[in-house]
Length: 354
Image 1 (cartoon, rainbow, N blue to C red):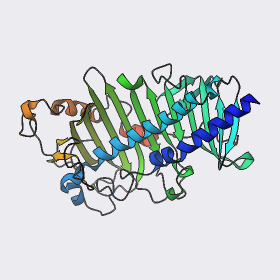
Image 2 (image 1 turned 180 degrees about the vertical axis):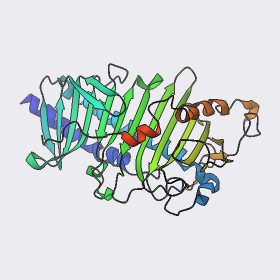
Image 3 (image 1 turned 90 degrees about the vertical axis):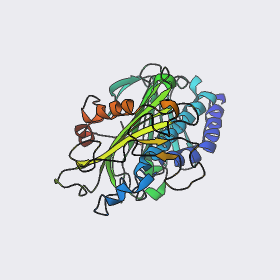
Image 4 (image 1 turned 30 degrees about the horizontal axis):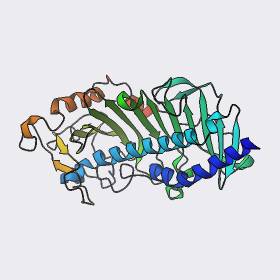
């Protein structure tokens, strides 16, 4: 009887935060939507891409997207750790509202992900939409420790956004995020091979975030393939790419670089010079703005000693961001390449009902 009480107490407690957390992290931010001029190529022209601070929507969107991912996954792990469910030694299943939950403490299985390959995880936590034989998988979460992502294989989450947000129409695609190394010097890689909704504009995307405690920075790299690749001439798939480094203390001084090209990840614009590179951001700049000027300082920066960078030390160096971007263009970072974007398989390990 005590065991049943623990499980249902967990479901009630978790349910209170579940709706808010997962709607936040699965809502399609403008990196996937018609609001982002960089990603939205349906206008048939690269001209909108050149429009002032809107060039840099990807910086804000990627930073927010990854922050909400971490918050959502951490929320689940924290609730698992504080609910006493982790004390269970056998598999437990419970139903709450329209969702079925299952925790398997002795999963001890190998899961093959698009970002990490085959890794073995100690425990698993799954969510289905519905119950019984008609329930459909919504989330899979694999981990070795609910309190330390630096332990073992880290954490792997796979979820289907439209199971948590009905506004995402009918595209039954999944997002995968892996976290290894912990918060101080960890790496997170998020991938999807969409589009995530029936009218989505992104076919495939990958975001990689790496924290460096010694340098006091967080580095971001991302590349995406739009559904319609007709902006650049050449007849091949177009690739949007962006890299930026942010200092990990307020006001989070950041330096960024981007490009959009046919058949290649590059910092140019359809092979022409991208005079908007490089750009500066910090959270003290236009914090109340509701458009693309929020946090934007300047672009077209060519020297670390320009007037926006007092003493040349506030912002991450242009050379460091160049080096980060070059990891994608050279292929030295095998996680983000044109080949990888064209071959990712994002899927649940099992689609069986609970």
